[in-house]
Image (cartoon, rainbow, N blue to C red):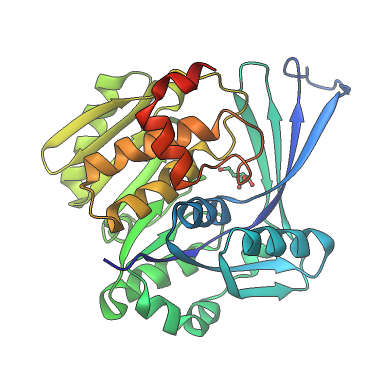
Length: 310
Ligand code: RIB
């Protein structure tokens, strides 16, 4: 099967700061080390799918600034087609991530040029989108662009993986038109209206959304693993126990890998197991895109899982 993937989404300059603890309110805290890397949920997902071997194109927007140039050159380095990324007069979007010693993090995102993306940019990419087998969307672009891409799916003939992140109010009838919806536990709580703090609750709530919307739902649960639901079936896929240094982009790695896996003929559940391996490797080094594995690296990891302890 052809593996043509188009990501309509964000591109951010990530600033990753390693901190020993959360600062107190009103406190200015010194940071010993800071890493600059290419990010943005959309571009991260594109890069992961491309690193695995899919044909991936990005539809997005960056500023006419050094950060935008950097993001474009990084995406090209990973063989993502950037011919439909527009340069705007608004500065490039940014991700500001603070990473704690156990690898967990909190992140704030500057919308920047990502929110200059318009439905006209989607029309400009019609040729690419008509060739796409899968289109990936997230919430770091204007909601009308998400709705437009969802509306065009049947006419232009692609499936949609919708990463409904960061959580925001979206019309349920549009979410229901997406084939697969992926959220983390915090976002799942927002869409379910209930805190998701254990696997059984995740299964129950994901199944409710599955039945309500008639599509597949995946809840990623950080270091615990993920819950994958389809029809009346809900399974829990545990994560690998690895030495995590930083989890930025782990969910994006999962989504990019899942899109590749589905186009390689894997079932949803097999694809999610494959995606779990990819995100395990992603958390083992810094930066979202630089840390994402190639197909060879994933295959080696799955064949010789002991390397996870090295
Ligand atoms: O999912 C991780 C990404 O979220 C980061 O790369 C950051 O830019 C934000 O978009």
